[in-house]
Length: 452
Image (cartoon, rainbow, N blue to C red):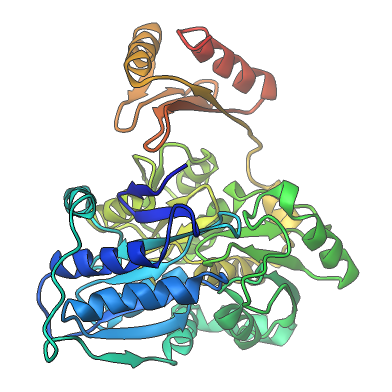
């Protein structure tokens, strides 16, 4: 496949596409694109078996360019981003391939705000990566390396500080049985202690952060059969599921039903807006359950192009109380500027305490939609014609062209979003409607406009 270089950094199959020379070169390049600062950079990784080698190489590249570095070791992506922000670091880098299988790894580049780099800087780094290895600093100009073992507790404390005091006391008095599956990733290090601090009686499965994923690590329903069985076995009130770098959260209800990642953000918004009214931001491909929740509290929803950074910047611009993406990624700016599974768990538990309802009851009170996702191989020039055809066909509907084309059918409470992939010659089509037949019909209508 080859090394993938994008706005987020680099990613590839370890050993064939991605090696330590790539990581060290990226570190040397990245060091030169950040403003000079007296504060050290932050480096962390998920728990993958390949991560220590790549993290060491990345760190070596930064040090060889004269940058001081604080190594957090294995840490969740939101933990690292919180530390970048809290330490006023000039930037940071996280060795992770997110939800990809064990064969993959990558390096995610983070700016001083704790967010992924803007597209302009990312493109300059991408161009520089195609060039020669930068010059090594002199013997006395190399950077200094230190470690920080307090990052996880700082993250836990930040989540606890964001909780409602009364609801926190209620949770601690109820001693809810909760199950956490961290898929042997980075999430259990802070996730289990957080749940215990919230007063939960916690059962952890796949909790050792050894990177030997017990299943496909993406937290989607087809991969969570073990979790569903464990929730029933341990009589848990809810099962929480993290991905390897713990920025996404899936939820399994007390009946062992995986309710789907789209519900994570909807439930989180429900809680936050009930105690902290304000606008919401999410991307164009996220379920309109978010709109329904926001409408219930009289709040506006801002839709952005797909991508966590786009959502995070919109949240800052519009002073949003909460936001995120439909992949289980909740952003709560009071804690961290990025998707954070720890914040999401705390929000859902507080919603349970506030309402006295189970997860199945809460999910059942949200409007029901059917979402269908598909992708079709399509060259860039052909994609442009397809989008043009869609715009012409639905010119009388509500249209958003910030990222491909999204058409909203307000009366039917349905939508369809068509966008080209940033990394592959494919077109992604997502449709949602109260009836599956309607969603399928929207998909078919778009396919008929030049994708057959």
